[in-house]
Image (tube, rainbow, N blue to C red; front, side, top):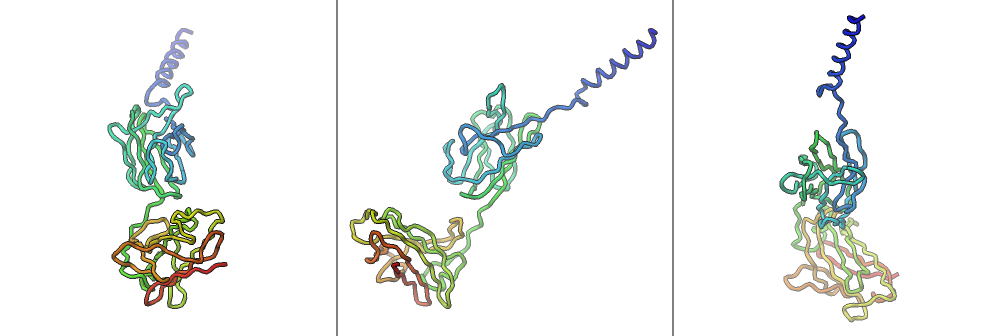
Length: 283
Protein backbone atom coordinates (compact mmCIF):
# COMPACT_ATOMS: atom_id res chain seq x y z
CA UNK A 1 0.00 0.00 0.00
CA UNK A 2 2.86 2.39 0.81
CA UNK A 3 4.39 1.62 -2.59
CA UNK A 4 1.16 2.59 -4.42
CA UNK A 5 0.84 5.83 -2.46
CA UNK A 6 4.46 6.67 -3.26
CA UNK A 7 3.72 6.25 -6.99
CA UNK A 8 0.68 8.55 -6.73
CA UNK A 9 2.71 11.13 -4.81
CA UNK A 10 5.49 11.06 -7.38
CA UNK A 11 2.99 11.45 -10.21
CA UNK A 12 1.25 14.34 -8.47
CA UNK A 13 4.58 16.01 -7.85
CA UNK A 14 5.56 15.57 -11.50
CA UNK A 15 2.27 17.00 -12.83
CA UNK A 16 2.36 19.76 -10.25
CA UNK A 17 5.73 20.95 -11.49
CA UNK A 18 4.64 20.58 -15.10
CA UNK A 19 1.52 22.67 -14.60
CA UNK A 20 3.60 25.50 -13.13
CA UNK A 21 6.28 25.38 -15.81
CA UNK A 22 6.79 28.67 -17.65
CA UNK A 23 7.03 26.80 -20.94
CA UNK A 24 3.63 25.18 -20.64
CA UNK A 25 1.63 27.90 -18.87
CA UNK A 26 -0.99 29.58 -21.08
CA UNK A 27 -0.56 33.31 -20.54
CA UNK A 28 -3.47 35.64 -21.28
CA UNK A 29 -2.61 38.08 -24.11
CA UNK A 30 -2.35 41.77 -23.26
CA UNK A 31 -5.52 43.46 -24.53
CA UNK A 32 -5.84 47.18 -25.24
CA UNK A 33 -9.58 47.82 -25.70
CA UNK A 34 -9.51 51.64 -25.76
CA UNK A 35 -7.76 54.50 -27.55
CA UNK A 36 -7.31 58.16 -26.59
CA UNK A 37 -6.01 61.18 -28.48
CA UNK A 38 -6.97 64.01 -30.80
CA UNK A 39 -10.09 62.12 -31.87
CA UNK A 40 -11.42 61.85 -28.29
CA UNK A 41 -9.73 63.39 -25.28
CA UNK A 42 -11.65 61.15 -22.88
CA UNK A 43 -10.86 57.92 -24.69
CA UNK A 44 -13.09 55.75 -26.87
CA UNK A 45 -13.57 52.07 -27.70
CA UNK A 46 -11.40 50.27 -30.19
CA UNK A 47 -13.37 49.03 -33.20
CA UNK A 48 -12.42 45.43 -32.45
CA UNK A 49 -10.28 43.41 -30.03
CA UNK A 50 -9.15 39.91 -31.01
CA UNK A 51 -6.65 38.42 -28.58
CA UNK A 52 -3.52 40.57 -28.67
CA UNK A 53 -4.65 42.59 -31.73
CA UNK A 54 -6.82 45.70 -31.39
CA UNK A 55 -7.99 47.85 -34.31
CA UNK A 56 -9.50 51.32 -34.52
CA UNK A 57 -11.13 52.19 -37.85
CA UNK A 58 -12.20 55.80 -38.32
CA UNK A 59 -13.15 58.42 -40.88
CA UNK A 60 -10.73 61.25 -40.32
CA UNK A 61 -11.99 64.71 -39.35
CA UNK A 62 -9.39 67.45 -39.78
CA UNK A 63 -11.01 69.35 -36.86
CA UNK A 64 -10.06 66.64 -34.34
CA UNK A 65 -7.63 68.47 -32.05
CA UNK A 66 -8.26 67.33 -28.47
CA UNK A 67 -4.49 66.97 -28.06
CA UNK A 68 -3.60 70.07 -30.08
CA UNK A 69 -3.16 68.64 -33.57
CA UNK A 70 -5.59 68.44 -36.51
CA UNK A 71 -5.10 69.41 -40.15
CA UNK A 72 -3.87 65.95 -41.20
CA UNK A 73 -2.16 64.91 -37.93
CA UNK A 74 -3.63 62.88 -35.06
CA UNK A 75 -1.78 62.02 -31.85
CA UNK A 76 -3.00 59.05 -29.79
CA UNK A 77 -2.20 56.24 -27.35
CA UNK A 78 -3.76 52.82 -26.78
CA UNK A 79 -5.44 52.35 -23.41
CA UNK A 80 -5.81 49.53 -20.93
CA UNK A 81 -8.18 49.30 -17.96
CA UNK A 82 -6.48 48.92 -14.57
CA UNK A 83 -8.72 48.76 -11.48
CA UNK A 84 -11.56 50.33 -13.46
CA UNK A 85 -9.48 53.24 -14.82
CA UNK A 86 -8.51 53.72 -18.45
CA UNK A 87 -4.73 54.04 -18.34
CA UNK A 88 -2.70 55.38 -21.31
CA UNK A 89 0.39 53.45 -20.35
CA UNK A 90 1.72 52.54 -23.81
CA UNK A 91 3.67 55.00 -25.86
CA UNK A 92 7.02 55.52 -27.62
CA UNK A 93 10.03 55.31 -25.35
CA UNK A 94 11.97 58.52 -26.09
CA UNK A 95 10.13 60.71 -28.64
CA UNK A 96 6.84 60.91 -30.52
CA UNK A 97 6.53 58.05 -33.02
CA UNK A 98 5.51 59.43 -36.45
CA UNK A 99 3.31 57.02 -38.40
CA UNK A 100 2.96 57.36 -42.16
CA UNK A 101 -0.07 55.87 -43.91
CA UNK A 102 0.78 52.31 -45.05
CA UNK A 103 4.30 52.80 -43.67
CA UNK A 104 6.33 50.92 -41.09
CA UNK A 105 4.90 50.11 -37.68
CA UNK A 106 6.22 51.81 -34.54
CA UNK A 107 7.00 50.19 -31.19
CA UNK A 108 5.59 51.43 -27.90
CA UNK A 109 6.49 50.44 -24.37
CA UNK A 110 4.63 50.38 -21.09
CA UNK A 111 5.11 53.66 -19.27
CA UNK A 112 5.69 55.70 -22.42
CA UNK A 113 5.07 58.88 -20.46
CA UNK A 114 4.15 61.99 -22.40
CA UNK A 115 5.25 60.66 -25.80
CA UNK A 116 2.59 59.79 -28.36
CA UNK A 117 2.01 57.96 -31.58
CA UNK A 118 1.27 60.55 -34.29
CA UNK A 119 -0.60 59.59 -37.46
CA UNK A 120 0.35 61.87 -40.37
CA UNK A 121 -0.79 62.40 -43.96
CA UNK A 122 -4.48 62.00 -43.07
CA UNK A 123 -7.07 63.39 -45.50
CA UNK A 124 -10.35 64.80 -44.26
CA UNK A 125 -13.27 62.42 -44.88
CA UNK A 126 -11.09 59.39 -45.71
CA UNK A 127 -11.03 56.09 -43.81
CA UNK A 128 -8.05 54.77 -41.85
CA UNK A 129 -7.27 51.89 -39.48
CA UNK A 130 -4.87 51.87 -36.54
CA UNK A 131 -3.74 48.33 -35.66
CA UNK A 132 -2.21 47.72 -32.23
CA UNK A 133 -0.51 44.35 -31.64
CA UNK A 134 0.73 43.54 -28.14
CA UNK A 135 4.06 41.72 -27.86
CA UNK A 136 4.55 40.71 -24.24
CA UNK A 137 4.32 44.12 -22.50
CA UNK A 138 5.20 46.18 -25.58
CA UNK A 139 3.02 47.10 -28.56
CA UNK A 140 3.46 47.46 -32.30
CA UNK A 141 1.29 50.17 -33.90
CA UNK A 142 0.58 50.50 -37.64
CA UNK A 143 -1.52 52.91 -39.75
CA UNK A 144 -3.24 51.94 -43.00
CA UNK A 145 -5.67 53.72 -45.32
CA UNK A 146 -6.02 56.36 -48.01
CA UNK A 147 -2.88 58.04 -49.38
CA UNK A 148 -2.94 61.39 -51.15
CA UNK A 149 -2.12 61.13 -54.85
CA UNK A 150 1.08 62.77 -55.99
CA UNK A 151 0.64 66.24 -57.52
CA UNK A 152 0.55 66.36 -61.31
CA UNK A 153 2.24 68.90 -63.56
CA UNK A 154 -0.09 71.66 -64.70
CA UNK A 155 0.12 74.61 -67.10
CA UNK A 156 -1.66 77.74 -65.94
CA UNK A 157 0.04 80.21 -68.25
CA UNK A 158 -3.33 81.16 -69.80
CA UNK A 159 -7.06 80.70 -69.22
CA UNK A 160 -8.51 78.98 -72.29
CA UNK A 161 -9.84 75.64 -73.54
CA UNK A 162 -6.33 74.15 -73.61
CA UNK A 163 -5.87 74.96 -69.91
CA UNK A 164 -9.27 73.50 -68.96
CA UNK A 165 -8.62 70.34 -70.99
CA UNK A 166 -6.10 69.29 -68.34
CA UNK A 167 -7.44 66.57 -66.02
CA UNK A 168 -9.15 67.98 -62.91
CA UNK A 169 -9.09 71.62 -64.03
CA UNK A 170 -11.45 73.67 -61.85
CA UNK A 171 -12.62 77.13 -60.92
CA UNK A 172 -12.99 78.04 -57.26
CA UNK A 173 -15.31 80.89 -56.26
CA UNK A 174 -15.17 82.67 -52.89
CA UNK A 175 -18.18 84.88 -52.18
CA UNK A 176 -16.88 86.28 -48.93
CA UNK A 177 -18.36 89.74 -49.60
CA UNK A 178 -21.84 88.17 -49.23
CA UNK A 179 -21.00 86.02 -46.23
CA UNK A 180 -19.95 83.10 -48.41
CA UNK A 181 -23.23 82.91 -50.34
CA UNK A 182 -21.16 81.61 -53.28
CA UNK A 183 -18.44 79.19 -52.29
CA UNK A 184 -17.28 76.11 -54.09
CA UNK A 185 -14.90 74.27 -56.36
CA UNK A 186 -16.39 73.36 -59.74
CA UNK A 187 -14.82 71.21 -62.44
CA UNK A 188 -14.94 71.93 -66.17
CA UNK A 189 -16.81 69.61 -68.54
CA UNK A 190 -16.18 69.39 -72.29
CA UNK A 191 -19.06 70.66 -74.43
CA UNK A 192 -18.18 70.65 -78.13
CA UNK A 193 -14.83 72.39 -78.50
CA UNK A 194 -15.25 74.34 -75.26
CA UNK A 195 -14.99 73.59 -71.54
CA UNK A 196 -17.77 74.77 -69.23
CA UNK A 197 -18.18 75.08 -65.46
CA UNK A 198 -21.57 75.88 -63.90
CA UNK A 199 -21.65 77.53 -60.47
CA UNK A 200 -25.02 77.87 -58.67
CA UNK A 201 -25.78 80.83 -56.43
CA UNK A 202 -28.59 81.72 -54.03
CA UNK A 203 -28.15 85.08 -52.31
CA UNK A 204 -30.22 85.38 -49.10
CA UNK A 205 -32.61 88.29 -48.78
CA UNK A 206 -30.82 89.43 -45.63
CA UNK A 207 -27.27 88.99 -46.93
CA UNK A 208 -24.94 91.74 -45.73
CA UNK A 209 -22.50 93.03 -48.30
CA UNK A 210 -19.17 93.67 -46.64
CA UNK A 211 -17.95 95.66 -49.66
CA UNK A 212 -20.73 98.26 -49.31
CA UNK A 213 -22.05 97.79 -52.83
CA UNK A 214 -25.56 96.86 -53.96
CA UNK A 215 -24.48 93.77 -55.91
CA UNK A 216 -22.23 90.72 -55.73
CA UNK A 217 -18.54 90.99 -55.16
CA UNK A 218 -16.61 87.71 -55.21
CA UNK A 219 -13.20 86.36 -56.16
CA UNK A 220 -11.78 83.07 -57.28
CA UNK A 221 -8.99 80.93 -58.65
CA UNK A 222 -8.37 78.65 -61.60
CA UNK A 223 -6.54 75.48 -60.63
CA UNK A 224 -5.72 71.87 -61.39
CA UNK A 225 -6.04 69.20 -58.69
CA UNK A 226 -8.11 66.25 -57.56
CA UNK A 227 -11.38 66.25 -55.64
CA UNK A 228 -9.57 65.99 -52.28
CA UNK A 229 -8.22 69.51 -52.73
CA UNK A 230 -4.75 68.22 -53.55
CA UNK A 231 -3.85 71.24 -55.63
CA UNK A 232 -1.13 70.79 -58.24
CA UNK A 233 -1.30 74.47 -59.21
CA UNK A 234 -3.67 77.41 -58.84
CA UNK A 235 -3.72 81.11 -59.72
CA UNK A 236 -6.10 83.88 -58.80
CA UNK A 237 -7.64 85.37 -61.91
CA UNK A 238 -8.51 88.90 -62.97
CA UNK A 239 -12.11 89.66 -63.98
CA UNK A 240 -12.79 92.41 -66.50
CA UNK A 241 -15.75 93.01 -68.86
CA UNK A 242 -17.02 89.45 -68.41
CA UNK A 243 -13.66 87.79 -69.14
CA UNK A 244 -11.11 86.01 -66.96
CA UNK A 245 -7.37 86.35 -67.43
CA UNK A 246 -4.08 86.16 -65.58
CA UNK A 247 -2.31 89.48 -65.22
CA UNK A 248 0.68 90.62 -63.27
CA UNK A 249 -1.24 92.92 -60.95
CA UNK A 250 -3.82 92.69 -58.19
CA UNK A 251 -6.78 90.63 -59.45
CA UNK A 252 -10.17 92.30 -59.75
CA UNK A 253 -13.20 90.86 -57.99
CA UNK A 254 -16.05 89.29 -59.93
CA UNK A 255 -18.48 92.20 -60.08
CA UNK A 256 -21.94 91.34 -61.52
CA UNK A 257 -24.59 94.03 -61.17
CA UNK A 258 -27.54 91.65 -61.70
CA UNK A 259 -26.74 89.56 -58.65
CA UNK A 260 -28.25 91.28 -55.62
CA UNK A 261 -30.00 90.19 -52.44
CA UNK A 262 -32.66 87.51 -52.88
CA UNK A 263 -31.52 86.41 -56.34
CA UNK A 264 -30.60 82.95 -57.50
CA UNK A 265 -29.26 81.35 -60.66
CA UNK A 266 -25.94 80.17 -62.09
CA UNK A 267 -22.61 81.65 -63.05
CA UNK A 268 -21.55 80.01 -66.30
CA UNK A 269 -17.85 79.97 -67.11
CA UNK A 270 -16.92 79.03 -70.70
CA UNK A 271 -13.34 78.43 -71.87
CA UNK A 272 -12.79 78.43 -75.63
CA UNK A 273 -9.67 78.60 -77.80
CA UNK A 274 -9.27 82.34 -77.25
CA UNK A 275 -9.99 82.75 -73.55
CA UNK A 276 -12.50 82.37 -70.74
CA UNK A 277 -15.81 84.22 -70.37
CA UNK A 278 -18.05 84.48 -67.34
CA UNK A 279 -21.78 85.31 -67.33
CA UNK A 280 -24.60 85.25 -64.79
CA UNK A 281 -27.96 83.65 -65.62
CA UNK A 282 -30.76 84.49 -63.16
CA UNK A 283 -33.74 82.23 -62.59
